[in-house]
Image 1: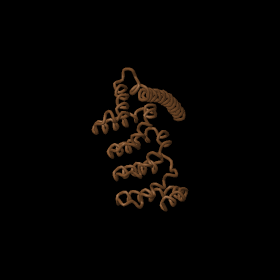
Image 2 (image 1 turned 60 degrees about the horizontal axis):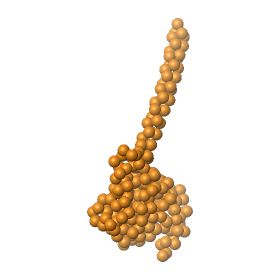
Image 3 (image 1 turned 30 degrees about the horizontal axis):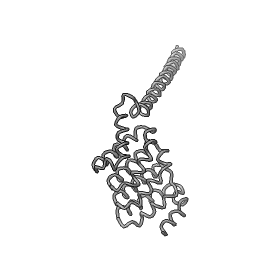
Image 4 (image 1 turned 90 degrees about the vertical axis):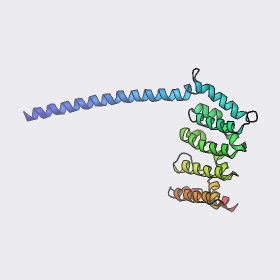
Length: 219
């Protein structure tokens, strides 16, 4: 009698397990479908859809940023470039189509606030669209030589975060970060020391880039 009851319990557990597995497969498929739908809306509808309000503002903001001599109000340009950067975190296509414009502004803008905002925004974009930023990371490294201390500090903080968290690859430009060790601003120097201290805990990261680091420190 007991053996028969035990056999019945085992069968019920097996059936319940099979039902649970079937439910997990169904739920997993539904979640995948929802994820794909959300991704499609994010990529193709929010900034490109015919009925999307953001789509209208996206092209307007790009136009204002690209024509900063015509729309030369400082507050307008600060707001427009920040808005553009935020929208670029929504869609990879929108980000890619406006990335060169953003880099041009970063290189040529005489306003330190705009440059500082864009440096931070590039860090956000690297989290969203890693490949796009990693391929153009040299634009970010250049800001380590910025004339403004705040821009330089923000650049160092963003690069530290991206490199230590594996979001961008450690490349030859790391020598530019080594030069920050000798920066006249104590905050920047301390940040650089903290970066290299953390980097030293990762396998051969400093050793592999040692020639570039030494050559930059000797300049």
